[in-house]
Length: 98
Image (cartoon, rainbow, N blue to C red):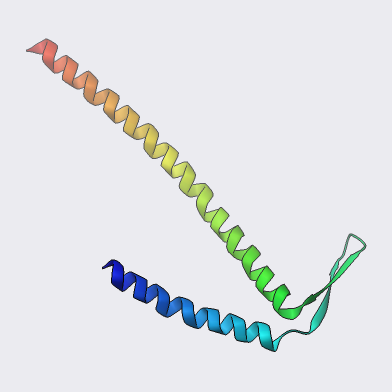
């Protein structure tokens, strides 16, 4: 199974990487990026702007996915601790009863 996952990952990664390289080679022209409220303008290649925007979007998406997952994991850990305590209380009450 891990070998299949590795092959599938490689089968997806290689074409995407090739597409990104071709895109970067074909779009080397400069574009001016102006940060409006500030007096700042930067000339970057088109591929740098596109790939940078994509990277920022991926990072923000990962962050927005990770935060609720962290909250869920905390709630799960608290529920597990409560379960362990209740099981111990039940075992103690059962031992006292017998």
